[in-house]
Amino acid sequence: VAPLRVIETPTGGSTPVYMLKEYDLVLKCLKKLPLLHLQEIPWKTLAVVQKFSHAFIADKWIACMPGHLSDGEVDALLQMLPKKLQVSLLPFQQDGVKFGLRRGGRCLIADEMGLGKTVQ
Picture 1 (cartoon, helix red, strand yellow):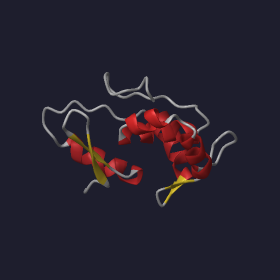
Picture 2: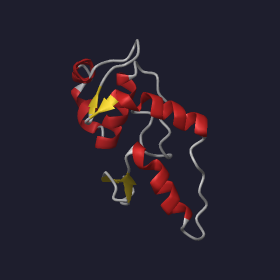
Picture 3: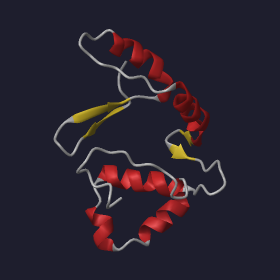
């Protein structure tokens, strides 16, 4: 299964990103690897993610719940940030901020230590 894209990490590594619909196939491939400790996404969590995954269609966010913001509203809010903060955010941090703003500020950022969650 080819990844949708590969994201460069701040530590110089890279992480493949797959489509949600490919979860079962990716999981099946990973289970074949020896010495790999694999923890599946809990079924309740996966069910919720799948339920709300329709909010992204063709890489475009669609606000689907009360309190969710459109991409236009998110862009307007981002423009209100101080310029110094706007230019200091790395691309993955910008994605995290947009993710939270789209959901009306209701999100959990669970990046590794030292990746700038406080700034987000």
